[in-house]
Image (cartoon, rainbow, N blue to C red; front, side, top):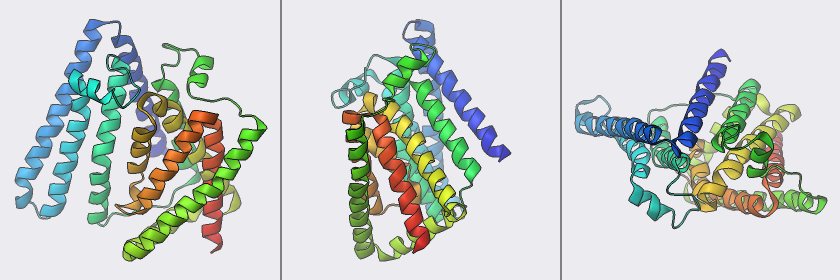
Length: 315
């Protein structure tokens, strides 16, 4: 638990530093230049490390895994570096609602693009190496939620360009009226239909992988299968993921790209048709956030995850 808390402090600390740096860089040429130097230099080093790993992969004991690691580094470096190019930002800004001249938006795009490109390769590497996902602990869920919420508030410039109230409004955190709460609860049924279709397709076209994913998820959630644990997991995913992804990221980078990032971080599902369902669920939650606010999306996500876990434990 100590390591998790330490990781949380480091992650939030880096997030706070980057947020303050990027938001102030819009008004400071020196900070902008330094931002380009640091991000550009790190991106170049990661790309060179990836190329080196690919070149030397045949000399490694596990050549396939080494090549995968090299590709992951290459993808990470390109993801971090490409948004530094103004032309790339302007092209992407045609299909995403971010400001191509904003340093904060540039840093956010660099981080998100790096995650989108590298995470699938990292997940494949874990699977190829025979890696496992340990059981999630209740304390970890609380810490993860805190990290996501704090990163969300930091990313929108809380106490830098916005006060706390303005940040909450930017994140879509207002209480929906009763009618919208009813719609949010009804959408839980839609979520189950989407997940059911994706699961059925995986069972038909990837039967071995479907069983492997099911066993993995039972192993990951074995410590939280009672009612309090299921509620905690549901609230953790609903609050943390929705405030960060739908609340902070989506208004700046759009529903489709945010849903793509949300999908690729679910590496526990491997490269399977289950991810099609995750993407469809993310699109649905994105539309819910757009028209009813983030709290409505939190309700749908939290109730769906809680019921899924309780049903899984009962079967």
